[in-house]
Image: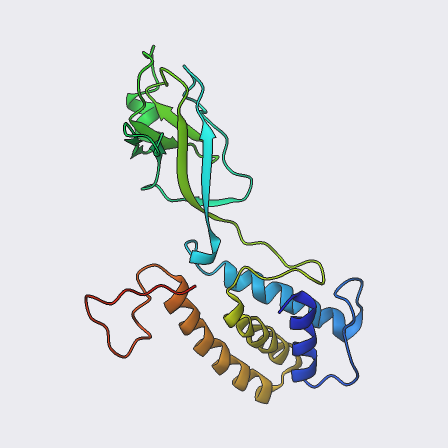
Amino acid sequence: MNFLQLSQAVRQEVGISGTGPSTVLNQEGQLKVIVDFVAEADYQIQSLWHDWDFLWSQYSSTLSTGTRAPATAKPTDLGNWDMRSFYLNYTSDDSTHLTPLSYVEYRTDHRQGTATNSTPTYVVVQPDSNLIVDPPPDQSYTITADYWSTPTKLAANTDISAIPAQYHRIVVARAKTMWGEREEAPEILLASSAEYQDLLDKLESQALPGQRTRRFGNVDSDQVVQVI
């Protein structure tokens, strides 16, 4: 469901008479509250975990000879780096895995004085999340990494949540919970809270690393779980 369809579903299920909304833009009154709750519900769910699978992305950039700080700029949608995933020239036979180094350790033990260009062995995330490599590169390298992007807020009618489509219902449930709290409607609040918790458990079991087996009745070591 897109943003408009989610909003329409919430409006219908909380019992607001009439139709609509016909758009998520420039609404007033109760329909504006519904639209705002849907956007906020989706954003809250996306923000629950830094490492949702649906926020995963990949990064690639080119290092310049002799430049180590900052070696390259972060992605514009960066939420968190996967510090295990930094490689130089990973498609070549001489690829190099970069060892993470804390910024404080880099500043104390590596930054001071002159440095000789060589193949970098360390990657450092600055406090602003841009990258440093050490030692400075002796040639142009391709640096790659995995990262998790920041949640994005629904804004336009046709915007689609990053949450997997089969779990879009969780946004409706959470928005209804917010509506039930606002309107002091216990029947809506109780039902929607229960639905939200059930769907959150299912979503976490699919979209969080290490939790995919928890919704299986029979799990063995040979089972491979891949949900598309």
